[in-house]
Length: 198
Ligand SMILES: Cc1cc2nc3c(=O)[nH]c(=O)nc-3n(C[C@H](O)[C@H](O)[C@H](O)COP(=O)(O)O)c2cc1C
Image 1 (spheres, helix red, strand yellow):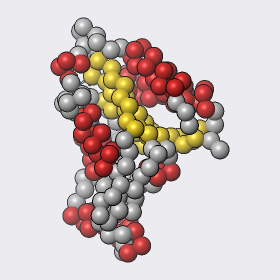
Image 2 (cartoon, rainbow, N blue to C red):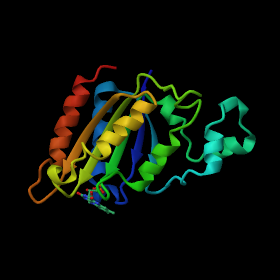
Image 3 (spheres, rainbow, N blue to C red):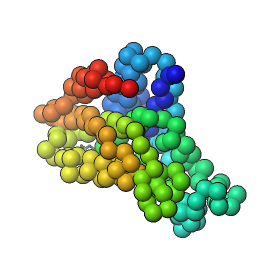
């Protein structure tokens, strides 16, 4: 059986100008070279930004799936979060905006908080054996951005909350003093994929 990857793009730029889109595609190519047949469930948040969550959304998300009204089911279809369950590897290509992930991604992340999908009624995480790969790109140096103190920490916590602790980051820092190039990220991705046992 082939593998399934859930890939999210966030950059407002086209692929030819976007480090995260290009490096995300590189990851998919390398994964396919090693593991063969692959199905990619793809979401472009720059083209299809999710709506912000609302009180109606929360009321729907907190009701067990079998007890939701037709209207509540409809609310939870935008965006469709089923790929979280279907795919065992999630690839987040995150442009760095204002020292954080793009707002579209933060909004999408809030949608992951759903009873029966990611958490139980007592907030026990429901997901198991998932892996997350985050590719980010910045114009500043690592020292200036410090993703480990910013979005790395919050993404790790958000993932842990739904049962995912295997999270790997590949950050590109294209500052004047270039602290990590796209080539560095590709080398690190190569190593990650060559070590990956599925
Ligand atoms: C709205 C906006 C905010 C940005 N904020 C930051 C920032 O806080 N720190 C930084 O280093 N670069 C910042 N940048 C530059 C991007 O991180 C950089 O262009 C990166 O390569 C974006 O990813 P992409 O190449 O996939 O589009 C910002 C760019 C935009 C458009």
